[in-house]
Length: 260
Figure (cartoon, rainbow, N blue to C red):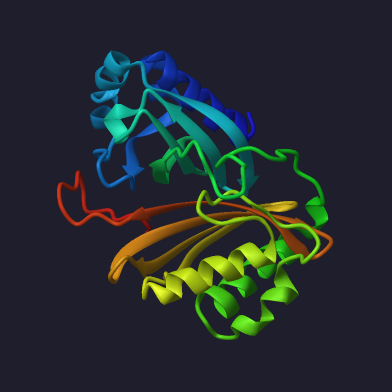
């Protein structure tokens, strides 16, 4: 099986409460980075009755692969155990050299019905193209974050983001370069502009790149920023994200939300 197929089998088993298959495809010492889910396979299996009670399940929107890592864009339904009826998530799973599910990272946020752009937090293209441009597109995403979101050279934003086509899925920001400028001006006026401080992981497949970054927002509180970009002809033309505050209390383990 490919790594995508292994991960798909594992997630399918989770949805079906098929613990036999889960034990076959995942390591017993499965490492968990969701701060509220215990680490280890058996403690994770121990949570399945809670998901069953609420009818919680995931709808996969996108699935990509970069080496040992499979990264996904998911919608969680009946997701009260995670904090709300519907949640949007990015999930990353590492498959080890033995073809076993070994490690999981994620970030989740509440699904918003009305957005500034009229787009949802998950709609848009899903088909991978331009596999030969994966590394160039990953470098493009890093340059955008370092120059614009980390503030090294914000004026270069037009070098990275298309001025002709930019579809925005952050629910609070409008489409286009102008939408970004408006959002930055507003957040700055409120003294609440987010600040990226470190890129922890960059994963890509063709025209899609996911970055996992650490930063500060809402009064200096530490957050994790998952940004999914779609590239076309050397420019970023679409963006989805999940921003989650990094909790400090009620943690199920000490693995942290990063540790790649």
